[in-house]
Length: 414
Image (cartoon, rainbow, N blue to C red):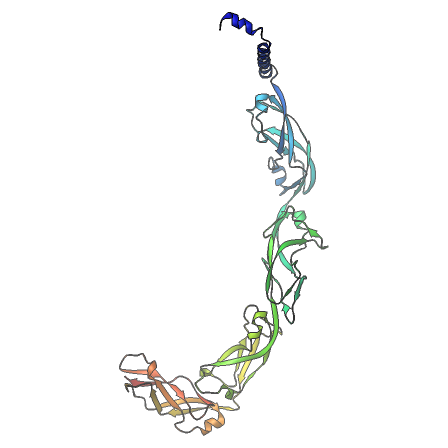
């Protein structure tokens, strides 16, 4: 550009305005950076740190439970290049908790400090000079959970058994002053519902003081926030209580034994779904192979889970009188082999002596010689060939009121 054209630029008002603006900006920047560098700014929402210098109250076993404010704004002054980059992390604000002697509410002053001495700025003031805090011990306590099922209606001839809560106990942790006000913990059904079968409801945890006022969960930590309430719907039934027999020989009529029971029937509360299928309750079994007359056989009543004895019957005693029974030892010479199509088995025992028979006195008396027959079932033998001892069973064809008691063997050869 030649000198003539350059000189003409200064005659152009627009060019002169642009030059003036650039020079003004440069002068402003110089003043800001080098002449007037100090700047005041506000750092907002700086958290109050209650853990800083906490030994003053923790030595008493106390913790800060509540504060009326959580953050403050902090006014700072320093070079613009510093203050413009400050954040809440560059400042720590903490309560001056000194001279406390126990739990309670205190209003204490707030102090702010720089977290680093490298940054060149100063702290002017805080938006709040004090904070109100509550100090208390943090404790944990276990409470049983009560169930409130007052909104539930039970249908027809059913009834509700004791409700079951899961978990049945919860642990509550929080400030001592608040935990100590808890009198009971309740799980309650809120739906109005008519039940005819066992049902599970989910409930929130409700806390009450001794005046039945509801306590909020604020400041409290619960080991469970929800409780399952199981409401067992049961039905009352009355059924015969029985004691039965095992090792009953084929063909023997157990009515011959004239058994007596200390309790003949039992009233039960059972799950509604099972009620119609229960016709009796068997408390136990008497082994006929070892039967002792005029002896009391006592059985504990062991009910399935979910059943309950309404009359709280826990035992039944059975006895068999010897007044109509006799025992007699006989010799059995009739020893037969059945299911031996190829006649492979040779019975070497000729007579089984001292075989005990038990039964109705008249039936035993009328039993003829040879009326007791021993049997060997070849289809059940698994032994190898040769001479061996095997167990026999007995039949008494002429009566169903007598049976053979005990176990007897004979010798055979295959």
